[in-house]
Length: 96
Length: 93
Image (cartoon, rainbow over all chains, first blue to last red; front, side, top):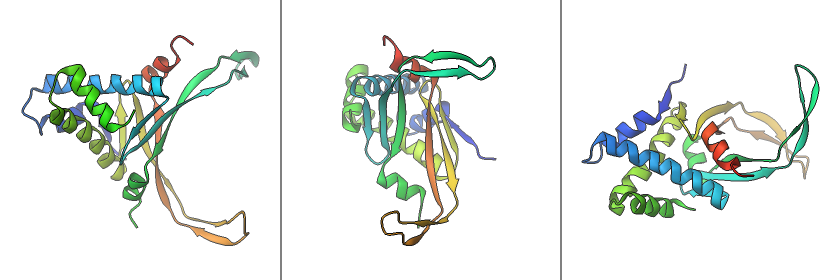
């Protein structure tokens, strides 16, 4: 069973490297996430070198079906996010 | 937006020095990378989660030449956007 890294642990790791309070570091991480969200929305892409790229792209409206009632419904157009990993990260996660 | 703009925006918004913002941003992404390299899952509430999938090697074919090639086993991370990110993107459309 693999473990899960959480936001709180990331905050702790940053906190150990800086001479600041944990509360402040936590707020900075929240601020970072909100900047990232806005960037994906505004620029449709967020590029993190050595890590990867978050891309937003639009999906058209389509007809769907409720599998339980087999009722036909229209799914609204929406935006989705995909992550593409960088070459560097790909090589790091697949050591040869 | 790229990483240096991310660092600058974080520093400006929170009135903190650039080198501090640099540590926050770099450590944030490095922690996620380290976890995934170990094969761990990562969950960032409000943004999304990552998991690593293992793919077995297989015999493939180059579709252009028809030549058979061995595809090595590989690991690829998958990102699933969180509800807040999806909602944020789809606000006012």
